[in-house]
Length: 394
Image 1 (cartoon, rainbow, N blue to C red):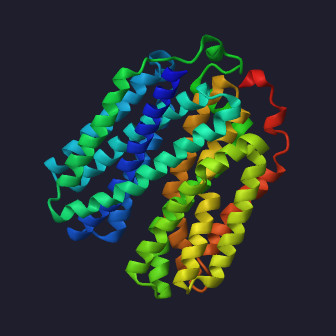
Image 2 (image 1 turned 90 degrees about the horizontal axis):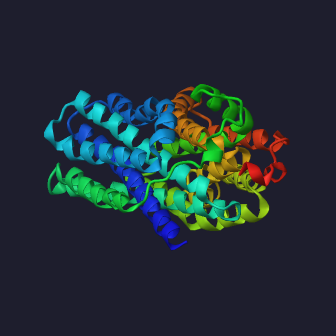
Image 3 (image 1 turned 120 degrees about the vertical axis):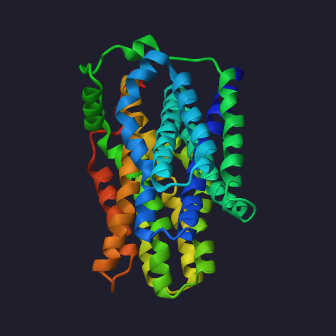
């Protein structure tokens, strides 16, 4: 039991540095490219490299993990992140940095896939929500700490990359003290009637498509609130310093409720809790639309929204784990990552398009519409109630 506990916290540490590397790169490279005179459109397009890397890697990870086990996938992913961060200062060219972003996206997704699948497959059903809540909490923590490295640009432009690569390496090396594991033999037997990865993806989609909507919605929320809302906020007349205080409230507040909501989901069920937090999120953003000219009003509504819908990614993973047999969990975890990435890529574009087409309408209405669609989909999906799934399937 102690060995499992040590392994769990090493995996959680790796999730933290994955969040840290992503949270650092987005603002750090945006600032550097802006200072170098790169246009905002090219800057935004450049930022998609991270998520493109996730999409490139996703279809090719299930088979290697079945053959090699969890540990090699995590080690390879971590090595990609560490090496890519270390070589950023070597050559400042747009195409070179874009390739490095893609490599970090691939490495981060390998880290996520390995750690997420290892945690979901080895967590007892009664502790699954709590364990995945820790996963979400520490990723958010790393993501929140990452942007602080931009302060190091005042000292030297290479310093953030060097220090972050050293930090990531120091955590990554802990994986050498963890014993490798594979999915259990009975979990790899083809019980789903599908022998190809594509077939397993399709089967996982049919059984758990509704659980992929929360990660997608979270991807849209995170990228839109961080990438598009600042533009909308400036147009409303809020100054940059106030927006820099308002924006972190969403992520910070989500950290407060991640663990309590995860534990609560183990007790009352993922579906009920998702309906509650998403319903609360719709109401909160509806209020935000009426108080958007008040900085204090936005501060409060962003915090409330974070406490509610800031946990939908980890709750979605838990829900997916409830709906799928263990043999399909690797495919399910990959598809959660794909859903999040598609949301992260499409969110800023759709949000920006909405602002252009509906200049007199509140930005928060588009977020409400997205959450309402997810709410209805979860509410009407009656057949996939977690309580009806046999224990043997877990």
